[in-house]
Image (cartoon, rainbow, N blue to C red; front, top):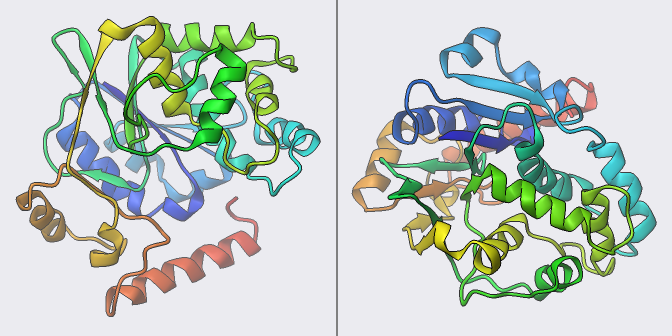
Length: 290
């Protein structure tokens, strides 16, 4: 299955380790990984590296007509009365909008840039998608879904994991349903923004919306499962994680490990952590990356 990763500059190191593991454990030779990011962030990847690992870099402002950072920011500034996070919303719209792009085929797997698979995993078996489920429950997500689609949370679990398999036809159907809602906005992502209260910083989830839409309209195309996911792996090994560290986590029966930037490791791993942060800060100040 093709894999789609939305990338922020802060994750440019960990995503390279991630991609090697994705190619090893999740994909066949002919499948691709699509990195969607600000075009400036392409500086982190050589053409040779991209080719070797079957990666295609996509400019986030050019993938889907009308969808861009500036477009999202503009709508949010008019609607939101609280602190705004346009990049947080944009990456969700990009994961959905990939289905509308020329790169999409029949299905794709959304994957977080800082989450590494630790062994062979399948996301489509016996004609059904495998959705990893958890226990999050954030009310504003479902307030927005109700305004857009007329239903709230339909499952007794959360669809928010670090990955999700997407059926392209179903995602297109969902986007069309949103576009046809009576919420203000000319484009589907504008309607999503305007369907939020405007008072909550995080009021939409692409995972919850897609998962509950499948629950409502396509319940037979998926089944739920639980994986052993370690969200705090960064506290143990930092983002300069080595192959041996990943093998140790796999031997502990974890399926995936996340290395979030907010998790600071102890000495000596903390040295790389701060060197990486300083380098990125300098590159941003010089406007080499976004």
